[in-house]
Length: 329
Picture (spheres, rainbow, N blue to C red):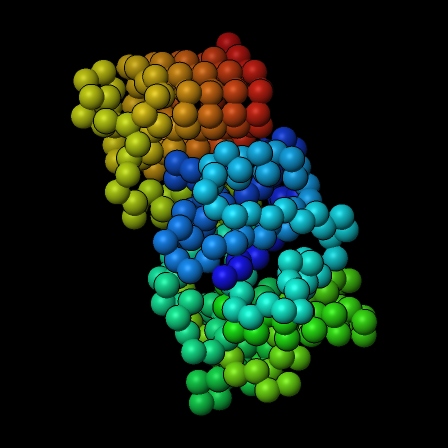
């Protein structure tokens, strides 16, 4: 079975970090955003993953091939960002049957096996306060009868949140081709919501499933919030915290990479320290520190520090990208 995962976006709201790193490779709770999704796939009936790539595609492909060596993967470049419908269509063929579509930049908690065993096509939804920012579904007797994309007056609060199990991928391909041919767009882009609506109109039975956890990673603020929630739920703290407490004060939940060198510091709560980091005489709370960063005599809270950064001295809050060097006097 095929899964299609679009990862082509530039992640402009997460600059400066996305100047050098694809959005989906930014770390949250100890591993890249996309890894929180991909690590659920082994053991399911998904045996083929198609990534729709674009911005910094070589960086992403190198990472994926290194981490998932035993998974059949394909990388298709979306040279123009023409919308999610267009991206998904690039990964589909007319012969496709069951297909799972997963957005690559939002973390979910789901029972993937249960979703993949559905009798019907099924979309992940969650009730939201402001549905005008999302595509929404309208249901009758348990089945979707209408889908509306980003309306000022949405007909429901059931937002489509980025997981789509499609029983007939070939029909979705046909419907995507149809909206492109008819130039059906929202804000200049071809949306998958409009193609799914055509599927329903052509008789496709479509249901919904609820998302247990849905973690947005679209901005620095939501990335930190998702880091908090995920650290609170996961059992893996990375390093041996008992050993670290001999020379540090560690307040869980945290993730500290096993090879990180942390001395005479106060770490946590809600802090992720990446592999290869060196932390000395510092206080770091509610923050994400990227791989191979070197921090000494620092005090940071609600901060995102990129990879290979070097920081000397104290600041209250930082949001700095890879290879930055800062010294406070």
